[in-house]
Length: 512
Image (cartoon, rainbow, N blue to C red; front, side):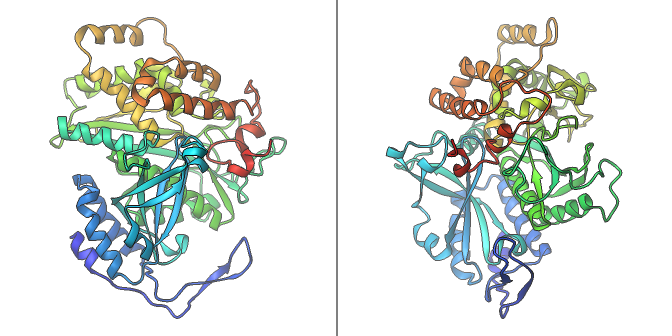
């Protein structure tokens, strides 16, 4: 079927069609360039789902590389390939490569690593990108421009080896090893919450005396069909569907102007890629409507924060390893062990899944905060919840993950912690269970400094991400923490917003 899609080279040529509206930045009339591929949303969904099915089957980038390069050569309507990668903190970067250039130099895509915080030093700046052709996606022209396709890239060092601070490639290697050596597939379904605020780029212009202005007061079950939030969600859902997300449910969330769009579970690496695309699409759709889509964990004190509840299960030979009809909550012993590992290393990994100053406002027990290091089927204050499930859907839900976390690093840490529990011998497991389930329930760190202390002294963190990454990541977090008031207080502060890793660019950081 993929061959059929790739063979359908059908360029839509327009004679300079006028696009309604004007460029917000410059006020100029926008024109659709002639002879560029411009697919309908239905066509986009069909094509993107075909490639997604290949990813889910485990088809490698190398196996698809020649097919997509041939497609690019033959499709005159493609002008550029957008190559995406993420830095150590999870900030998404995009580089547009001219199609003709990438056809002749796809194995030598270099960029300046010293310009990316947390990557190389200036004296060792050059890094490479290796395209992951299994992530090929056709893009909607109304948001990205006609004639563009997207792939994710893995960051490589100058010698071509995978770069140790790129956690997309680290997560890919971990999942490949589990699949090839143990036949285990990690399945993940994130629930990503965000807020819609009035005005464009309001995070960069944040003033703590004014705060954010909600786009609407509508929320859970009270958003009418033509409400601002509903119109945003409807458009966002259309674009998400076109990108092959396999939508399930989209709705306003509990707080006014808060949203959450749910989609089908996928393998861990693809799920992490979809998190990055989800936030990119939300921001782009919001900007096209004159709003800002914000993924700060707690942008408005006194309202529910935004989380990224992360549902996870392991499967083997198509069978859910987390299900046991006779087990407590219908969970298997494997699921119980994985949960124990995640809770045992909760403090060690807290900074990986709550990576900003603002994230610790969300861990407030007055607003359903999942800050207790325990597991429960009903208590939403628990770090891990067990949703109702059967042999297909049985899973654990890690509720503590914030929407601004690096999804690759967060999933990498969660999976690694779970594997320690799963592989523990009887004696070691008993020790872990005593710490997790015995005595008074412990809570997660209440501020970023406490989380940093656990992170920096953790042998587990040092082992799984390496001492160099441990030090670099901590240094980045101190940079933001030290530019924010040490005590959170009751008001969201300017520093924790404008120096937030998903908001600040280099110009902002240099204003000291």
